[in-house]
Amino acid sequence: MASLCRKEGSYEWIVNSDGFLALLSAEVDTSSFTRATVIGCGTSALSEEVLKLLSENRPTESGGSADSSVEPRVLSVDNDALCIEHQARCCADKPALHWEVCDLVDAESVAAVLAPDAADLVVDKGTFDAILVEGTVWELLVHVMSHLRPGGVYALCSLHDRSFLDPLLGPAARGAELLGIDSKLLTLHDAQGKEAGAVALCHKRGGHVIDAASLAAYEKVVMDAHFKDNSPFLSTEEELRLRARFAARIRSHRHPQQQKQKQKKEQEKQKQKQKKEEEEEEKEEEEE
Image (tube, rainbow, N blue to C red; front, side, top):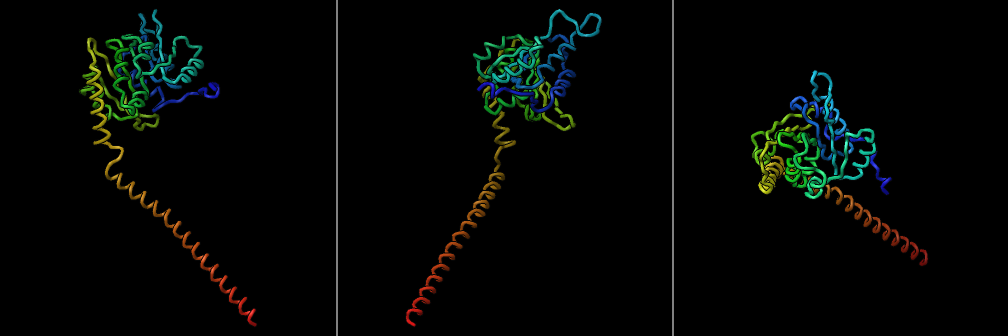
């Protein structure tokens, strides 16, 4: 059964990795970064691109190409074991890439895979968005911040725009204060130059302890404000429009049914009339 479910090829969520990483590289000095973690890697080429970024940006005494005694290493995690199996198989010739199954909102799973204060960089392309719909993104953020070393960077690529991310991760946001980060939000564009989402670059401060309960409560406030008030899934106007369309559809289905029943009655009536005429004809013939 497992062979029937094997992953094939690669898939890029939101935008190709190069556009996202170009923004990261332009804003963040990664020359001292040697340990990166890609969360929710899926079957993307993002992990390979992150490794390439760290390798090319390594400093040298002469200022030339990358050269260092510490080799860059990229750990990639996903809760889908088939994705991890696929990626490990496809990248078997790249020993600097490591792959682990990890549920990013499960404390035991995270503790087994993501060591505290271990990563210079955590890269997230779409995982924040996926977990957001479950109402547990605060857990993801707590685990990411724990895994980052002080001064490390959480680079988030989201399909949501900057106005959506701002209350949680914006530089002046309550969320940023609760997380203990200094942040910057950037607009993300696709290959055609169209707006495709946003990037949040979050630098972890040292010595900050996250109040998880307060962060969870704040996430709910932010999400309620957005989806109930600012951009509701179902506004009053949309509800009325959907009800009107539904009623019209019911009427359109009901009318043919009524016509069918009417036609059936007419046919029965015609049959009865024909039968009566035949009986009368037979009676007249008998009388003759």
